Image 1: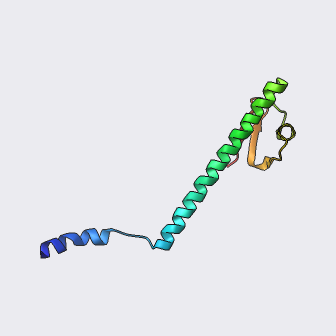
Image 2: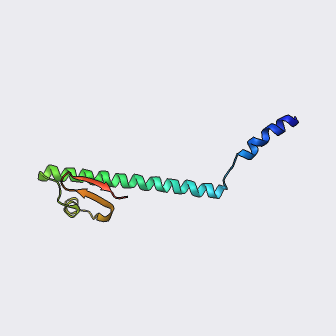
Image 3: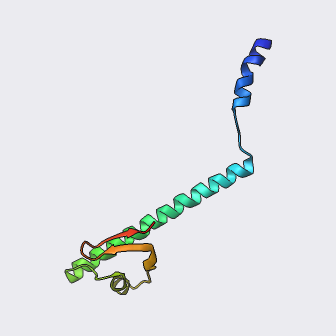
Amino acid sequence: MLFLALASLPLIFSCESKNPVEQYGDDVTRAYKGTRQFGNQMDVKNLQDAVRSFQVMNGRYPNDLKELEHFAGTTLDAAKYEYDPSTGIITAKR
């Protein structure tokens, strides 16, 4: 019996658990970052779809994000995106 108790001591002391509040905070932060990243990816995908639609209707890519904004009937935060009018590719700035 004493042998089992002594053998289990390393297991007990090696398990380092976080404070439940700290663990919850870490989980919420991780979920927020994942959601934000997913939202940015969806924004870029939607903008890329708008660029394709513009190109189909006009035979060329938009000259800049302002022209895409006007075409899509929306407001864009140009500081969040990089746009190459020669390729029509939009990426999120990091």
